[in-house]
Length: 288
Ligand code: LIP
Image (cartoon, rainbow, N blue to C red; front, side, top):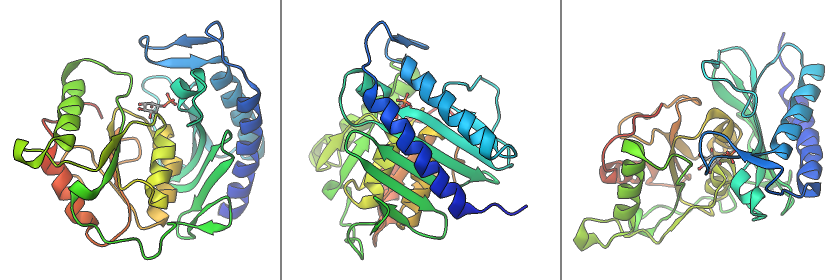
């Protein structure tokens, strides 16, 4: 049967608000938080409680839609082309643990592997981003995105504000690709760099994508994050004319579960920015 996308979108917003109340009421302590694969990969009881609430509500209302969530994922679970909710109960867990307010809940729906509905909610700033594929994206339901229309044309990478993330993998080839590329992005042109206006590492992939959608960031580049970090923000970004390509040079059509992403805001010249950025990437990511 055809899915009522508007109804699902509205239901996801109500769940995001409920999750937001759980998140702001929770007081993360070290005893209630733990680590997953290493000491920089954090999870709290709140992540698990929120995912439980979200998955229970969604399974009850939409029993025929599959569910994939960060805290219940196990290696080998595959995203299929069936309609699937893709959920990160707390995106920005490290910020949450440190009580830094750049935290969100990310609720996405993919159909045939295409991100189709996206809800990203920051309960600390009470900012809601939402979008349905083909029907636009909004901040707090009423402000259409991007915030500036038409978005300003791009000059080159040097005039961009760029978000990257260090992620929780801090060794090996991929860490080297990241850190060397970060250095090059910032370095002066005479040293082979792009000398971007600034590099930000804010700690939530979902909110980074929304910031590219609004126009508050120009580019966001990360490898190693997961479908639940990006599915919802992907819809919102695309609805604003933004692009999502591979973090490795070459692929213009990455999969939502491809684990390597570069987002560029809408605006004349965005393809040039993609090419210029790809030209600076030092090496190649193995993840994905
Ligand atoms: C995190 C991201 C963060 C990214 C990490 C991780 P979590 O999500 O949003 O920006 O660098 O790779 O995926 O663990 O807080 O949900």
